[in-house]
Image (tube, rainbow, N blue to C red; front, side, top):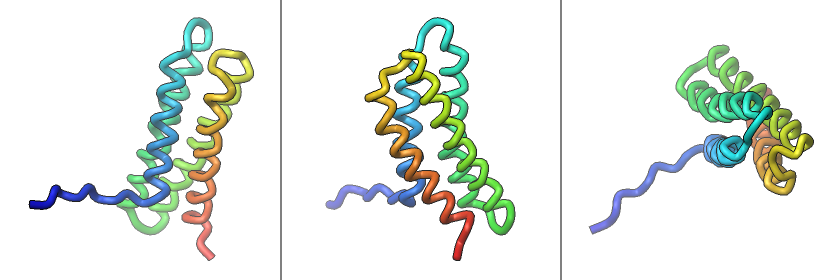
Length: 116
């Protein structure tokens, strides 16, 4: 008897989920006066994969709109992480791989919203 296979995710979705999980883990470590910024990290991290997936379920301009929101949220998330790292609220070495993932997600979303 074979175990059921897990459905595969589109590459952009998988990377967005990975980046979101890593960003959420970093946000959970933030204390003190930077906590409100960590809350924004949480919101932006959830928005990227959520809007990406919602766009996959839409068509036409509505699809593109959700992918554009996901792209903008990925940019926002990157900036929040950069600010937290710059302030010393999270370690820069922990932020760098998340920024790399978000850059890859943005590149995929750009190609999705700007087909040739």
